[in-house]
Length: 240
Image (cartoon, rainbow, N blue to C red):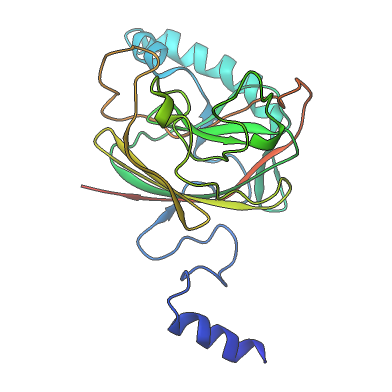
């Protein structure tokens, strides 16, 4: 079958509208947070509770942000239209803050990789090679896949509803919806978390911030070695 009939068939079957779009070009209703070329719109992450305290003294916030950028930026590079972290430095955060939103992004890790997505500066929608986890230390999570709210205190929040990861080295796609404090996550078009309340790890028992940045987590591999963590097609649609 030629490619044109295949595309027509995909559209008729309700395939994702961006299936044949170029990388880092947002679908209708979304805007790109990453332009595919540089770090415009991003900055070194500062913990959201610390940032709010620093904001009381603008000069101190400016100085701290400059130091964070100098530490973190050298470890995030754009390679072939993807944001790539080398396993060092620190998290990369959006300069803009967001309240309620739908977030689309693609991610890729290496074997034994470990990462995550912070929402409003709160960790995190988990990304990892769960097959490589220490099955003694991570009895609950071993082999269960990515997409859970792993930093929540409840065990049932630490594992996804189903395993939907592709093999390390392949691209995966998240669709994350945050409304109020409830998070729903689809991984590769499969529901892996539904209306799970995001807990405030920085202030246990307190509500999560009303708004905050989206962060891409820097993390070494599970054995402590360094490996690449890659992100692209980072799109957001803000919700009422």
